[in-house]
Image (cartoon, rainbow, N blue to C red; front, top):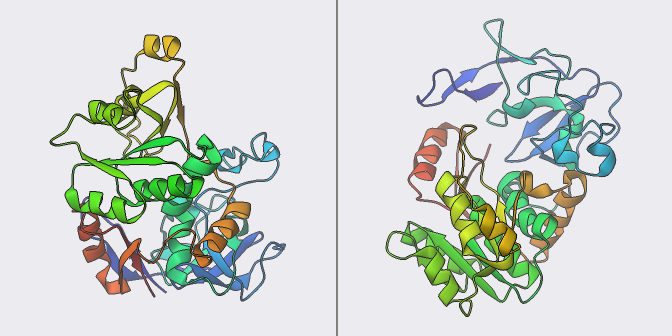
Length: 337
């Protein structure tokens, strides 16, 4: 089967013919469309059946560790003894000229077929478009989940969203879904702010030309936002969202930062203002429950995934897709097989 492989850092992906083994115990083989359809089951698999339409989840869940037992499956620690790019037995299912090829997050979806742990696929309704299923599995779940699962934003509240990429736009959608009255979107690019308005932002701030904290306070009767989400993952933006929330407010870090990043937050502001700063991974969702819920919201037109997908690409156009993504030219692009 063909797959897009990163053979050298900061170089284009190469589409190569790889050898793929069938699924072993507890694994499945999935034909990729944009999300996937189950093609083969390994021994012992019971959560899906052949022909099911599924969404990939990049987080495994063992079902018995301290986090899975408490329903916090995205924090699963039950598989920490094997690398995240190999199967749970430590081996690879994909090879190039006999040498193992790593699969990102044990899935590696830039390929015609994927063999992965069965716990990392979730069945969804068959009338859900493949492209919609693909983005539910990452940016939609992360952004919407950060609002409704992690922060529990209340109706009538004010929300600031810093960063209007794929995740940030879904934070905007989540805030609208939650009934937020004031939704302020912040970015450096006017076209991304335009996307944010389409998805429900009531106000926008271009951080190149405006003071984000001051403008947020002006839009919220001088108080600051009730909730602020950093969808970028930078040191400066982490400080920004904490400064931008009102006393008693909740700042949430959503974007993935560099491991070495450190943010100089103000402990006094947190104490005297009773501000809360938290992080959310994958929107604090429960994939086996929330993927189906998000699919229903999409099909009921309560969230807009059609407009979120700026364009689709054929597999051979994958590097063009990455180029447009890094230049901010699209909201979300999807590879369709």
